[in-house]
Image (cartoon, rainbow, N blue to C red):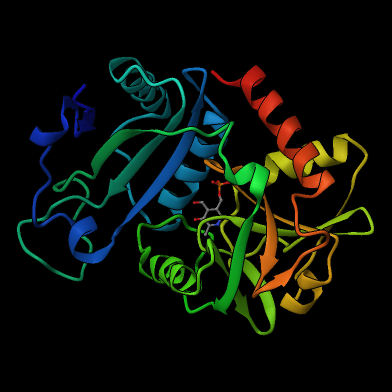
Length: 286
Ligand code: PLP
């Protein structure tokens, strides 16, 4: 089946989708994005992703070409047209395509933002990495200082994934001033003595939608949560480690820079949180 994608008001076969070469997303990474996961053909935490999208747009003084209600309808229509039961929907808004390349922002009254969405089918709930756990390496965090905005400037995270791959690992945790910020495309956690530890929110990390849900569910399940930075050495000595993101949910980390974490297998708390998170997501998906 040919995938149907959404481009600036039209649902078209992916091979027919077109964006201008002058689009500022293409030329300047002047765009924001969201990835919403789909379980049982329904959207997980659409409201959370929509709110973060609005915040990203506001921070960059960028307009959305559609309302949140219209976005919800586009998401649902893409799920329907592509018969998607499990996977994700990628959404990108850029500052549109002015007549020429220019550093100054175009007038939004003259140049509308571009909107693109597409589906990706993927096994999420039964992903093999959830049972084996993943390995990570540590790398310097060389990104810009507004990581709270979900922009399409993903070159350094891509380089980080390649550094991990080259080192025979699955992903990288980024470190700044001796403390872990987050994973290349996920938030990072350790567990010590039953306490879940993850970096506090600030402009230094992306405010993960999955992070918010998982911390809320952990507290509801009477688990102790501490929001603070931690070092790689502390993580290597932790009982457990894990990551969260919209498409990985909660995924255990069993090796950090070649050192085994805990017993070297997915930890009890990470697996419990994964189960609770998936259960709740299935119940509340829309
Ligand atoms: N941190 C970074 C740098 C990310 O790119 C992502 C997701 O893409 C996350 C954290 C997790 O955010 P969410 O749970 O909203 O997917």
